[in-house]
Length: 209
Image 1 (cartoon, helix red, strand yellow):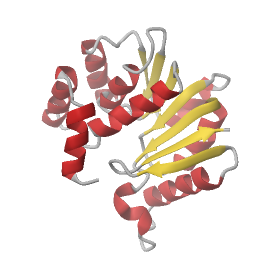
Image 2 (cartoon, rainbow, N blue to C red):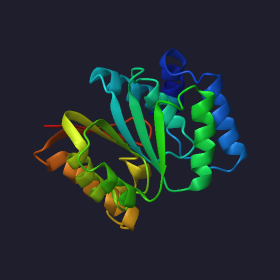
Image 3 (tube, rainbow, N blue to C red):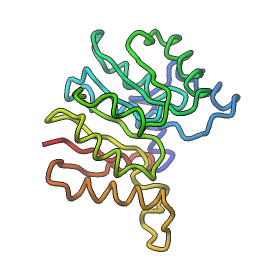
Image 4 (cartoon, one colour):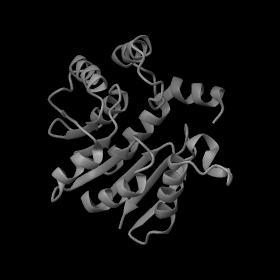
């Protein structure tokens, strides 16, 4: 998506409010990785959650809490977002902005490596799962998502185009292989119906059968 198109869509549907703007500025100032989703992607996440009337959402990869705020705002007052972050400094930063946004009671943040934390949710059912963390374990995240999502639930993953690296057959690092295999499963696994939406760096979206 061109910058002009992105800016046009954001100006209509996805303006950062004071909390989100302050979060972005503080994240830059404190040296958090500049890999948060765009506002346009945040609004798309909201629309997807509204569409399925989501109440119970899991996020893998909190970072500074930007995507978490977008999603938690799409949930009803009784809803809950559980978000997993491996870096304690990022988690502490996110907690501050969850509180500043008035969402700290709606968001539960768990610290740890996602593959270590996910088994704790075995037996729960989520309406949607958003993957935006390390790419090498994406195929394993796919397996966990299908275990934890209800029928009709949404599996969503950012960076499905991986900066174009998935298009280059000469690129074969572990992260790229993980994204390619995840995309292949979204396309071919009979338990889901999915596609990639070319917004930002590509948003994979799949509905569980």
